[in-house]
Length: 404
Image 1 (spheres, rainbow, N blue to C red):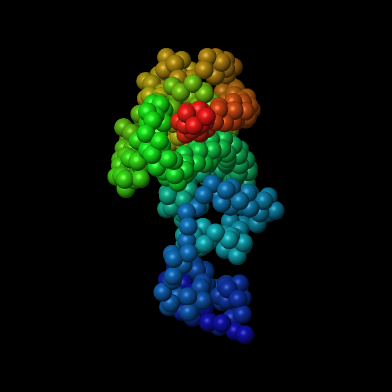
Image 2: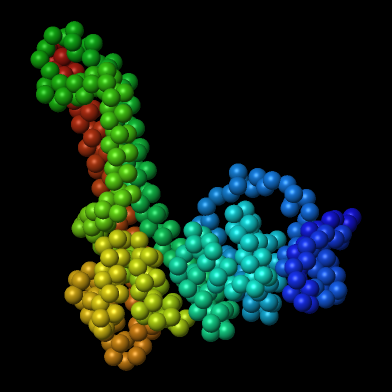
C-alpha cells in the first residue's frame, strides 16, 4: 500500500523544493527524486510531519551501554563499505532506544543538509560526551572514521565494564546495611515493646543495657515521625551539598582518604585518565587537547582538578609528567612510565600499558574489598542484634533466679 511522504530537496540550481510524493517506502521516494535530478535533504511520512509527537513520554536517558552499541554498529557498517548516510538510515530502524533513535534521525537530517558528522553529533552534548565528539572529529579529519569508531567502542566497553564492577562492589554492602537497619527497626518496634510490661511489673532494677534499649525503643515508637523526618532532611541536605561544586570536591577528597575505598577510587581515576588519554592520542589528538577532554571524563573532582592544573602547566611549557609528579595524586609508577614514554616518544603506548595494569588492579581491588567487607558486615550486624538480644535476656535471667 502506497504511503504519502513529505520531502525537502534542492534542484540543480540549489533552490529549495518542498513537496509530497506517494511511495511504498522512503527509499523508493528518494530514488524517484534522485532520478528526477533532485538532491534529497530529508523524507518523512506526511502523517508524522503533521502529528504531534508524544515520544518524549517514553524517552529515557541515553546511557553508556547504549552508546557502546551505537558506536560498534557504526564501525561495523563502515568496515563493510557503507556510506555515512546509509549507516544513519539503517540505524533509524535498528536503534531500539527511543531517545537515541530520535537523535539519530536529527543527525541524519543534518548530515544530508551538508553538515559534518562531528557538527551533527556536537548538537547533542548531553547525549554524546566530549570524548565521543572529539574522537569523531579526529576520525573525520584523518579519514579513518571506521578505525576511530572501533577504538571508541572498545574504550566505552572497557569503561562500562569497570563502572559495573565498582557499582557491584558498592551494592553488596549497601544491601546488607539496609537489611541490618530493617532488622533493628523490627526489633525496636515489635519485639522490645512486648517485654516492657513484663519488666515493669517485675519491679526489679533493670541493667543499663536493657534500660538503654527500652529508652531507644520508646523514643522510636513515640517520635518515629520526627526521627524519620530528621533523617530524610539530613540526607536531602547532604545530597544538595554533594551536588554543588564544593560538595563534590569535599566528597571526592574524603573518598580518597578512606582506608579501603580510597585506594579503589584512586585506581579507578588513574585507569580512566590513562585509558582515555591513550585512546585520544592514538586517534591523533594532541596531549594538550586530550587533557582538556580527560578533565571532564575523570569522575573524581580532586584528580580532575589535578588534570586541569596539568593542562595549564602544559601551556606554560611543562611536560606531561612534571605536573603529575608535583601533584602527588598519581602513583609513582604511573608518573615514571609517562616520563619514560615522553623520552622515547611512546606516550600513548605507555598510557595503554598503565590502563591495562590498573584495569586489573581495580578488578583485584574490588574482589579483595568484597572478601573483606563481607565478614565485617556480618560481625557488625551480629554485634548489634546480639546486644539487643542480650539486653532482653539479662533481666529475664534475673527474674528466673528470683523465682527459683
